[in-house]
Image (cartoon, rainbow, N blue to C red; front, top):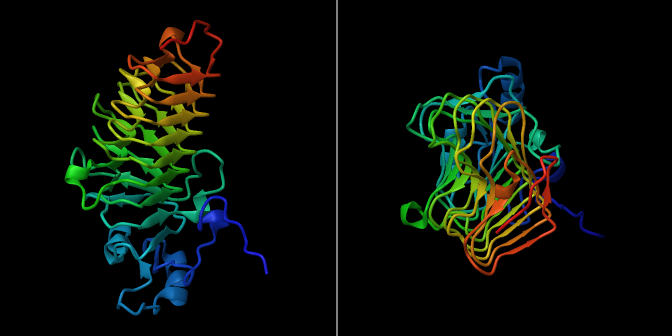
Length: 316
């Protein structure tokens, strides 16, 4: 008998295998305020308790993440909800090999539907989602940011439980919509966070009247792959740095991304490259196309990157 292929991981097609094949516990999250759905979920899963004493069904993301065990390959699965998954404390994935997904959101090839929205109401105290461990997956999450914070933040190894390497950040939407300042960002790896990781098929949107410096950035990671992301500046504010910023990253691969302006906003730099990076098949449409791709380091390969109707040239 043949094995069914899962091209987007074990969460493909909304299916999560509940046991076997190396999968740990699967924790379902449904907000109790959704009374009809909660009653149905509670009827089906309310009495399901795993061998370690943890319950399958949770009413908050934080309690589900807390129940996970490092390196057990646990899944936290969000159920669709008409209301945001609001939180006012730090929502942190701090255990290795934990997966936070919403299968109902994984339909689009880029970005996500809005069946599950994670909204940070904590002001300047935390990002929408913070990752402090390696081997983590975040997929199908619609992130709404707070003041001066990121949608998904991956910390430097010095601040992590384990090195935040080998991550899979895919099919998320980050909406930078709150009145904010230049500290904002979409999906950001501090220091060497995001090393050996894949950031793909995400959608980041600027929708306010202030400036944002980085939509996707690896800062100082190595061997990162950033591909097939869509970045839109759709408000009336201007970004002050690169939409994709590879910082001091080495040996990174950046391809098939789309970056463009919409409305009254502008993007200062499309992609800021660094040494030993490969940049190809990116499509960029910004006001100053001489800054579509920039970089001062040597040994950068930039091939078949396309500019927008504004004209201009691509330089390194």
